[in-house]
Image (cartoon, rainbow over all chains, first blue to last red; front, side):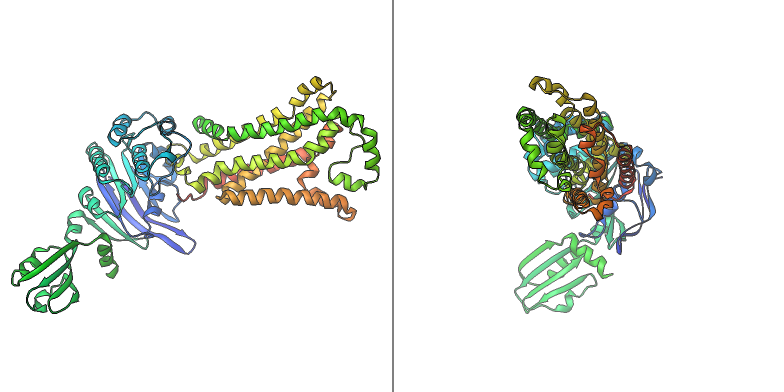
Length: 290
Length: 267
């Protein structure tokens, strides 16, 4: 049984079709990445999962229950990290923990999380840096060991050290049976953490793939300085796109495996070679061109 | 629900103490002034005779004498200043509870928890209501206990009647502010509408008193139904006024409740 299911879910704001008929099934234990540029509908989709927004049509089903009818009960087992974290600025972190514990029940991992993320519970949110506020939001979401974790760009503002601490916790909870639904702009994060990803464009899912397939779609920007003139026909491949071409200089975009290009380059005397991994935006653009 | 009630009550307690302090401070001023006002009653009565009676009514100065504390308070404190301060206080509470939390997006903390929107609404609404009723109960009846210290006689029953009227008035404005707060989602809009409405209705009452041909307008002003001279000086309660306050309160709360549980909240 799918633990998260969207059944032709739509959300319109007047004439704006923020989410326009999403149908997805996410199985228990999956770490699911939800990708898309700003304004694609990611946060709206997440808000529908938490019943912050009511769908215009369709349903969101969590754990076999309709969110629209059972959101209170469902939230007992949901951990949530919003895209922009907001707290009661004059209330200490400890008081926040106490309030949430009163509403949600006893915590499972609070002490361990505070230790791992090195957060001082006596401080007030207004005294925290952006990174520490994000750590605080992560602890609030993870402290009960939820069955479903819904996260909107969870590592935004977090330094690499604590990103790794976060990934460690995510994997631990996932091993214990948690299902994760996360939106992200970070390709590295998606590649290393998620099992499957959906790409959303203008409120519609335009691709739903496992991470292996996404890896094959990975792109590199390659810049080559030759010591001799080159034959441009050597660089005409279906997944390569020449961006810039001069007598001794070539810049191209390479989708998928880069080994073929490296093999081609062995024919030539190369003065300099720069290979840069393209960001998610390039992958999105590929989908947009489809 | 109790946890949200407590948090909501605590959040507003400081402003509650400030408003209560201001109310008591104003009361003390009039208690100090009252003996002097009573002594100079004849001078004031002669002055009042040269002012048109409708104008006096418009500014709640339609009192035959200022010999009693009830008359002084109803004309100087409870006639104009106190209701405006109280409306600002109730608007502050209502706007912070709903529009403020939606505006600052802190509402997402509560919405993400396993507690229904209905309980969030009632916890917040009742916390504010409790604070406002305590404020009224401290500021108004305290007079009855303080007056003997200043050797001033008061009519306890009239203070009781006025307290009842003031509570109905406060609940009505608080409930209306809550409804506006839930619909508007922005604190600035809540203040603009509530205080604008209050000032508008005050002028409606003033115009209806100054211009006799527009006398019927007074029925559209809350300040016709909330009248400290009638309750505090004359000891009369206006049942239709109380009923209207109750109806406004009921309709506003029901509208606010259904809007809050059904509405989209963008975080």
